Amino acid sequence: MNLLLAQCAPQSTALPEAELGDWLAQAPGWLPDATHKAIARRYVFDNYYQVMAFANAVAEIAHAQDHHPDMVLSYNVATVSFSTHSVQGLSVNDFICAAQVSALPEAQP
Image (tube, rainbow, N blue to C red; front, side, top):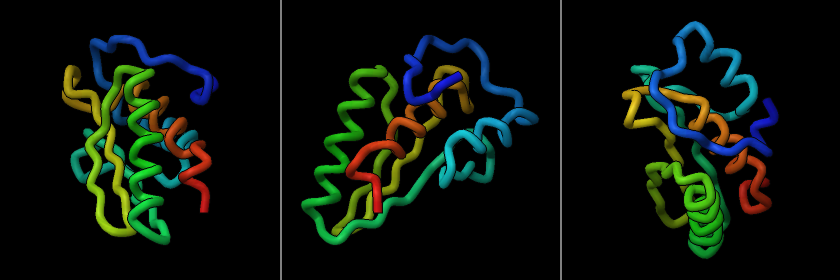
């Protein structure tokens, strides 16, 4: 599956934990939390303006995919976290959005 071109769809079950390594390989830089129910990535920028431009670009993806992350924003850091609340864990949708966020021009060092 090409995650950059994929569209999120309703999910009814979480991904099996045994498959998480394969999915994480398709989303470099994203790390699971301790419970393996969310993935997150930290992005560092030069200033607050760049953080906000990135946050707005992430919001565009979230709106288009109808899959919304948790974000923590500070002066020069944005942390983005995806999980699928309806399955109480990780789904393909989380990895689709993670890959698309990572591909944003604003996310590039």
